[in-house]
Length: 264
Length: 264
Image 1 (cartoon, rainbow over the protein chains, first blue to last red):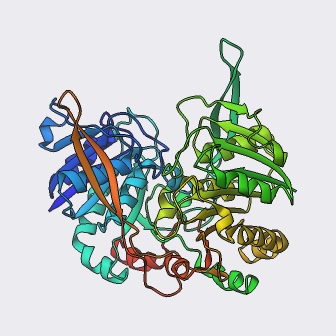
Image 2 (cartoon, rainbow over the protein chains, first blue to last red; image 1 turned 45 degrees about the vertical axis):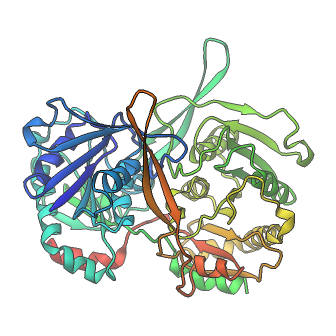
Image 3 (tube, helix red, strand yellow; image 1 turned 90 degrees about the vertical axis):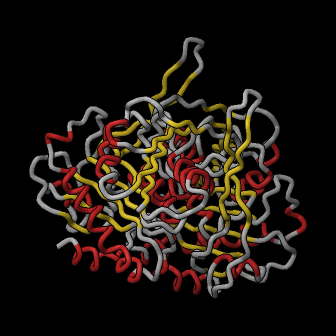
């Protein structure tokens, strides 16, 4: 088996190494990660300038024996380069992304570079999983929780059930958004829907530079957790690991009849 | 009425000005566009560096009397700044984006900065429409087609039916992906689904710089049009303007029963 791994927190992130360790037990891993943090880059791709790709020769990943590259592009760029350049267009068995430092539950999925790498895998015809721990610190201590056991369990279950899941999905690859809290007692795994609740409330910080010219910084408050049943936010708050299957076709089919009528 | 307009082709694009002209017949327009082309930036937002916002004082938009700003950020950043800073958090009546120079049909929607601006509007609780002409040239001559009539018709219909459409959508704002060809005889408007077909086939151009160090450029071939009935690619090929209603919640609900069973 071959597994492509990327992330958006870049080559320096603990979560990336932990994911590579787990995946390398089951497959040859081709790891291409951004050379610097690229959070909130969503599905941006770099089309108007060149990209650099360098093999990481240091010992960051030496102990897990994984072919490791850093790329100057976005997470989606990394997956394109891994498949088209390093694998010469051959599809890997899975694309994995993460483990992201920070939740990608609810509407975070729309902004997430981690999930874009997974979506890019699915667009290339490869089943894919993005993993995120609901803790933004790069220094998160995974040994304080049992999340890595669940990451491995979800990967193994995906490997074992791959053909069945694809067959039920009209022969299209699946794309999962997995989130888990860093707690010692994750209760289990719940397949749930994306919460519709806001996670962040935007505001803009306006300041002046030393020349008196204003600059703006996008900021936000983290809002309360969702209380709706059977969503990712709710299950995470109850210490479950969550899987949201993600659509690649974003059509709101239930809105088509009214639109057809209105535009007749 | 207040309408926020953005795009991803930047302040220099013809399509932006044409959209502003049409919208300004019906509303006060607040226009915030990127200061340089930001195509394929998807829903990237700028969180780790400051943004600049400048009022455009030249005569680019003088003849249409629209408050025009350029922003150093992405399309999604522009919409956040328009609503949170220029409108002080007050929701406009619509967010419009475009007219993009190039198709956003099929899987293009995932990479599109134009559509990200529209999705950002919907995330902020505002009904939104992204418009795209299926011609990549910034020099597209709209007078050679009747697309602008359809842009206006779609906007007017959205204004007239806004409350009804929102009510049928569980009181959530809608987000439409509108595409049209630049032909003199657009046949009508079709509400359709996003094609699942590939539009682009990726490849990577590898070259060496003057120091012998390789660089990579993401490229792609445009593939054949989709032949499936009732999709955007198919209707566009038949000279219709298309509307795909776009989901903000990306859960693949039909996959939940199998996942729940597998992870029990």
